[in-house]
Image (cartoon, rainbow, N blue to C red; front, side):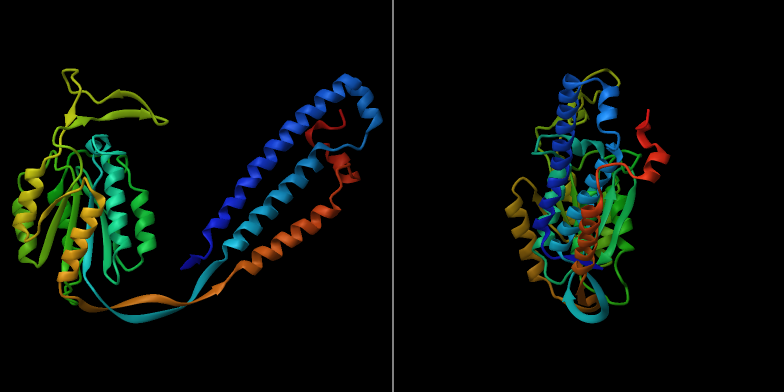
Amino acid sequence: MYQLEEKIWFWILAAIPAIWLIYIILHIWKKSAQRKFADKKLLKRLSPNQSVFKTVLKLVVVSVAIAAIAIALVNPKIGTKLETVKREGVDIVFAVDVSKSMLAEDIAPNRLEKSKQLVTQIINNLASDRIGIIAYAGKAFPQLPITTDYASAKMFLQSMNTDMLSSQGTAINEAIELAKTYYDDEEQTNRVLIIISDGEDHSEVSASIAEEASEEGIRIFTIGVGDTKGGPIPIKRNGVVLNYKKDQNGETVITKLNEETLMDIAEEANGIYINGQNTNEVVESIRDILNSMDKKEFEAKQFADFKDQFQWFIGLAIFLLFIDVFLLERKTAWLKKLNLFNENL
């Protein structure tokens, strides 16, 4: 386990492409000016030891040194001591719909990105609860098992997309069945399943599966993303809309938020349905619900001691800058023999 203390210093890395760009521009200008002064053969005679390779090498060394300094300022820390601690909370599983209909932009920026924003904000407001993540479309897929590592949860969440599952549809029933396997029967913690979906193309057995989950002590809360008026599903390439998804008759498909399905599922599992239009309202609703639930004690492992690692990167940067001082831009004997870039031609 690692921590990054001052992430803002990663901005220093932006200097590297800027330096390379300046180098390329100066190199082009220099070559252009030299061609006006004399021909290539004469220039070779006037500066026989000029080396393109050594210049590029110096630039690479400086770039790596800058990167090392940036990482040192960020101050990465590595966990060195794992401890078992007692915590109180609720086990929460997020089931996120990643079907193609979630690309509709009837809610900004689109349904899937809105879903990610909602889950991220809910996680940010949790204290000591454990969380898990499921992705589902035509099938359900375990994305992250129950954990207290919120940083990892948000990382896995951001990697979710509509291409991760080939089978399409909205198999809410499979997501519910998979969620059942996430909870620990021995600890008997309070169990919450939060489904984020547009409710389209659902299975008719979803409500009955939700009722079975309720009998096992799982409360299901559903969050609807999208608009009941619906919207088309864009087909994009490099962020540019090329077309919209069409049906077999060549008509543009309009996907709509199916609130009725999501309400039925929540009702059968002793939960409630929440419209996901307003992020703050969703977060407040979920927070109030969780605060009203009994917190069960459970054991969790976490790193209790983190050690700074910046010194290794500072050392690397100093070493590289020291090398750069003694790296001359003219050719050396062994480089002449290698004849890199055909410099002796």
